[in-house]
Picture 1: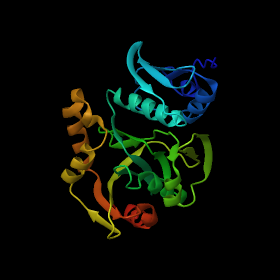
Picture 2: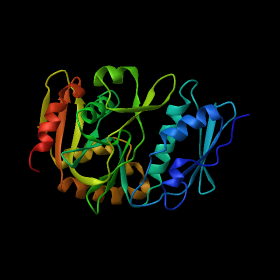
Picture 3: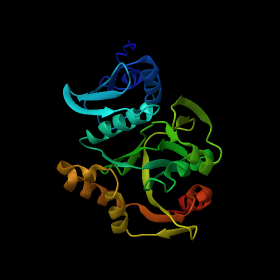
Length: 277
């Protein structure tokens, strides 16, 4: 039988009580608990998520405020990855005020930079390289955006570092490994920060030519955002999300970083971030 874990560190950080409660085998729950220990959602408190992992660690189910929300199969050797992704997605999609997008987020020169990219374009390795060179880590998974204040808040899950990610990023930033499964290690950078004003949205494009950092219009960036998991994908929030993202983009710089390996060209982003907005 697996050990039962009633709740975990995120509860101690939440004024409204636990954001997530986990029950399951100790070998899985300990890694998930540690990986979620720094998660905060500043600006609102989503409903409580109860996660139950089967004793054989093959399946898990989630309940939101006591109502069934989902059931997933857990891949052998990759249960931690699957659970963290599902939990992060559930917390994000249950937000009522903040907007979210599946993206990386760092603070460069004291201002927020949101990194949007499809799978394989180098988002995680670019975030890792930027943080290694001095950027403040906000998230590698979910950018939490407040369209009223124009800020991005941290959503501090560890970076999911796969072998090809480490190869592309080079050395990882100072920090520590919180967990590991067969497909990835979960690395928490040391340099963490709080909410900052959004300065720029960067879309990563895998191009053999370049590297180039090209200004794009807010409309083009809005279309890029709409292609990713975000508040746009929630039918009940489409209008609100459109208005909120449009408001954020009016006050932000928008660029595309075109390169076959964006992490090798973070100097372009650093120079860009230092320029006056």
